[in-house]
Length: 502
Image 1 (cartoon, rainbow, N blue to C red):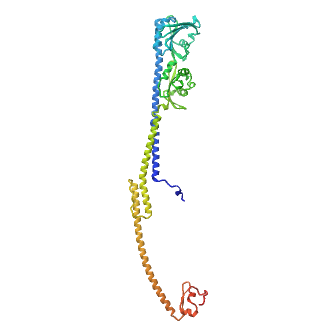
Image 2: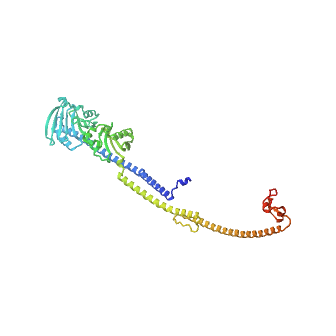
Image 3: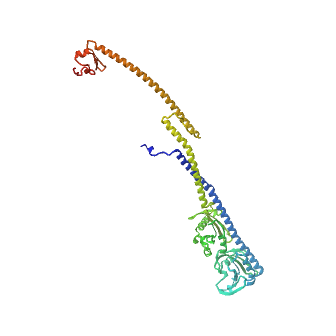
């Protein structure tokens, strides 16, 4: 069996439907890919950058405003102390001003006033609304200090004389202020643990020389937990992170993440590297930004096991302690469509593909029907059924031209067949006439031959006659009598052939 019979070819309509369907699928895929690459991805990039810039600006504004407010308050405190001539032991005048200051400035946790000898007054606001005053004079009291506890109505609840081994001269704020090259400048300490509460924080301090000739220091404490509110309350997508880091990468203010949702865990993360508290993306992003400081005005992408993240870091506040403001978020947070949107889009694409295939099938049928009709007409013409004209109606010029050509071929074949039939009729008539003439000639020949045979038989002399092959073809009766041989015995033989006698 021929190979072409083993593998039947597909029909034109089916092939056209499949090809149009594939073309529609390719077009939809190309359109989807183009929309993602030319519209979707750039839009996500712009949206991400815009949100990161906005969050970074908000974080920078909050952090800067906090430090600026502390600076302003600290200068006001210094001016008030200088104007009031408060001494380190003048607790009443000290409280008159700083009770109100701490009550109205949440960003300040405590106020410190000291001189170069180490004498100090500290006023601390408790979380319950009460107050603690610590009075120290290591030069005279050694390791002992007075601790005064106040209630929320600023009434003394207790006075204790404790041995705590505290000396202001050993504290970071005191050393930083005394190391200043000039007076009347605000100096900020690196984050450290407060002696009284054990909480991490920073201290802003000013040093000046009083009228008594001694160096005086006023300082305001800021807890890192208060700064952390800026990063944990900053909205940035659903999984975005905002943080403040020191130059060495330690967390000054951790981001809002589920792993640090509890206050205890959030406090425990302060002043630790991000990787140590499970913030690997933040740590990797910080290392990338430190490795490319020239790009700190742009954006960097960070690849993580959970996907791609976008990050923006800004190094600022170099004149104080120097920090990195960091905002980063996964790219998935800024994709403007959700899973249900993608499912709906997939349904729409499938419907469009189905509609396209249906149209393709309809077009294929419209193309295939006239072609199938032309195929049937061709088969009919091949069977020499030429009486009916070619019937095919189609709106396409090429198929109409093909039908016209097929009709022309039918007409030519029909004309040729008629001509052939006419020729056959003429030929049959000619053959009949010639056959009749031949029969007449044959009859005349037989008559002549019979006459000749009769004439020869009447002759007295023996006569025989041969053909061109020298074989006997006849004789007369005189020959048979003379030689005693019946003519039937030697007709068809040669002279030398044995001949039986009659």
